[in-house]
Length: 433
Ligand code: URA
Ligand code: CA
Image (cartoon, rainbow, N blue to C red; front, side, top):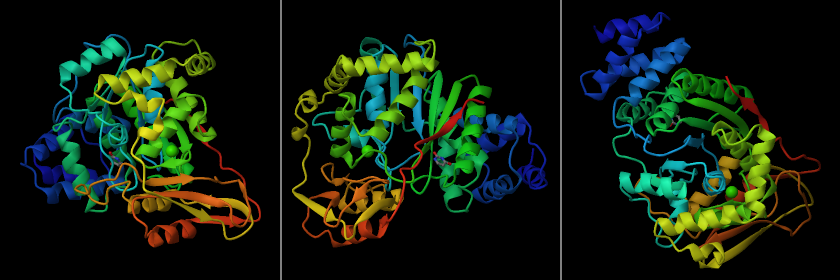
């Protein structure tokens, strides 16, 4: 087989065979096929697309390019949740203990954040002592015993995707549905879950800026998952404004605790219920989505979800007393209010820009090497659709330095007040095939 012939085939809009796709991914991973040929292929895929079969084959070729996690030693249906990335998205911190409280195994492999998108591990590390450097055996043991554990991403998971994603980043081929869908799904499948609930975000803070694009991506991922034998479904949710009120590591841990207590922000609560009930349903622990939601509400009411969060923290070396004493989480030195300059209704809180404002404070990483400050971030005091009067605080800045002029400027530039506005739709729909 010659790579040049395969590039030509895709350039002309023809379908690649399973063998051809395996040849490309193996050769690329092993360094036998050079970047320039794979760049040309990626650009051909960008313009000519891939069939469902090609997408599933590409995904599985990437899965087999490195280690895969075998979760078969864990009893029960392992359901994973994946978000395509957003700002202040605290859902994983809430859903992991919430679902585990119903005896559904949550075996989570997670990463650190880059840019304005926070990583679940960073957030959990805001809890003193908490660590994810546990052995594979410990991980499996913990999930069997407590139904919940988080482990750091293995170094050699889907190396083909790592290489291809980096190449796409510098060849203007990131934004291709078959390439994004296979990239995300390869990592989820290699991580070993039986069923996958996807939260596909749409809006300013998301990869997919329109609902139509988000639906297309959701269909692509759901079809890959189901074609390779993992029960997969997707929820399309709004990321035009940040989710919940907290953006920042400690602040989001506190927000998760409030939500597990039944006192979280309304949008975060609603999305957690939508995603959580799908997880419970896919795990076979409920007869219907309504039944699943009722079960989730019950473990919030009776305190089991909160207890599960404490158990999870203690299991991984963390100080579980933060659940009852959130003031023991890292606290910022300065709290600075951002008063509204006019009366009206909040019409827009541009998610990615507000995320960048939090990153400027130190809540996120500008580069992979940046250190993050777990204490800092932003608390929104208003959301889109809320009425405001001059002087009302729009946001409270939690900072570890006094000079926040640049952050203030970014916040003012990205929270728009108008005469009329309504809260956006939170959930645009679900995709099951
Ligand atoms: N996230 C991924 O992991 N891969 C993509 O291609 C895009 C977003
Ligand atoms: Ca939040």
